[in-house]
Length: 444
Image (cartoon, rainbow, N blue to C red; front, side):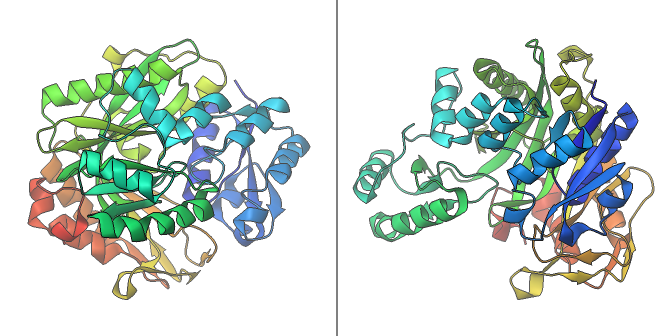
């Protein structure tokens, strides 16, 4: 096992890894940007090293500074957390080159799964159903028009190097395609450094359902159940729950088996997520593999009792999973609400500034993962996620009611948040019935 791990991330993600390491008896180093000097992870880590000024390009994405911080502090491994360099092939290769363990899958797997067209082709070969559309990118508007005619409109344009819900455009007809294609190309290049696009059939109504997996270096793999991530805004997840309210036992078993089949086929190791689109008839289609820890891993932890971050670290250290699939005990229902510093009344404009008062909810079945404290200053430079509230209960209805009680207890003063927006969704009849699809306007 490692003696010391450097955490190349910030906020609640860095705090989550610190807590996992502390329980494993591992010392931690937080690599932080100057804007996060007074953050909770910096205060709670055993060591902290400033790796640059506020802009992520000069700090959290600054590979030479992060590697230097690991050498200076004697860290044997780097946990990339969520976002930033978590799925960066080059960073994983650099860690490998300098004898530092990258806590995640190998660079070859990250590279192969990072390009969505490559991932789609690999999963088709592995026997998984994929969304109708070619496995290769569309090179220009003419190609896109030809493919769209073949699979029929509406279709979806996606960035081949995209992820996190970004780089997606829906196209209803030829006119829209002519306008959307060059814009999507430019967006893909600007966001991911890769202008390649691919095209898929638009499936609606549909649910966004993903399966959490763990696979060690000895080839042992387990799936920790599915998460329904259909409640989204602008393709960004808002609420996640496990189990999904729409899957029946047969579909649940089949989608879990498919996820394992996929990761086994590509030799995936570490914690990861296999994402699917599920139609109204419960047919499911592979979308992508996320080669990292997910924000919503918490709901799988609550329904299985397994610490996914600790298992991720153990796998990186070369240890075998200490349990098999039949040992995973699924229990109850868990829901996560992502609280963000955004103003819903002004098109969810990001908010920054001092949190004058923060009171986290508590009580039975409530977990809060947050780096907030009263007096903390939310910086304007990064993602607006400030807290995750997770509710667990024996059943879904009880979990929803418990979450509403928790949100009513939660106090965040000084910056505007989406607390009220979450309450609105949770009280909506379609959400309580579980009859929604991945289309937020149909809910609220």
